[in-house]
Figure 1 (cartoon, helix red, strand yellow):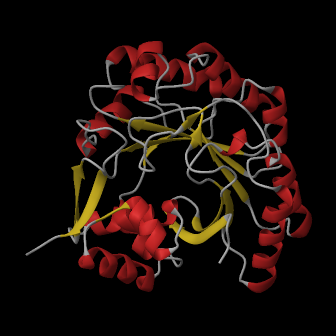
Figure 2 (cartoon, rainbow, N blue to C red):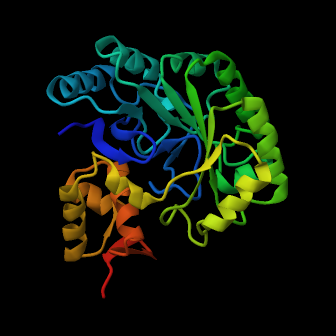
Length: 312
């Protein structure tokens, strides 16, 4: 059992993806209302070696020596990976032992105003930053950032990274109706896209309950109307969660273990993490599918969001 690696997980965008988690749960620069990993417990911009480089590199080397190569090695997890001050060292270590495996970085992009952060990611193959708002009020309502973050510097960092980075940038935008889908924000986002110049803009919405109540997913029709409004060829709506079952890394035994656990008693995401010994992100991938197939339902209670078997 690895401490800092998880998966491979069935990723809609990255196929069989081996996750690398470089920060503890839930260290982040944002406290997004939609986060399926829950509320941020350490809202910060402090960069440090949250997990030891030596330990992470040993796990990566051991995995690659004893398993088939994944489609991607992906920096992601239950927090913001660029907060780890050794992310560049881990990335370069991966490239030094197997340069053929592409490396992806899932990041909120808020630290890209820092020249050092941008430089540390230059060896990546794909970077997937998020930008849910380009107008200050929407940014604060949906992303709830660390107090010193602001939209002009956020977007400026993404623009500078595009100038320096030779790989692909897939910009993710997650829509929550009523929070960031007003005309003012959509116009501002398009202006930002034109300056950032990503290779692709991936439009997404909530799959399951987020960190707060009273928010909902955008419908396919609502997302399509935003695509039409922007009128840009590089915008695409992310495929539905059930498509994960077509991915080679989708494991029926993992799905069964989750279902059997929930059958015994309703569980939160954290309950399942402790019982199954799986990473939160890995469990989330399967919960997305199970909810879409109406095998489970989620209910928000005082202790959090509980998952239960759907009774016929």
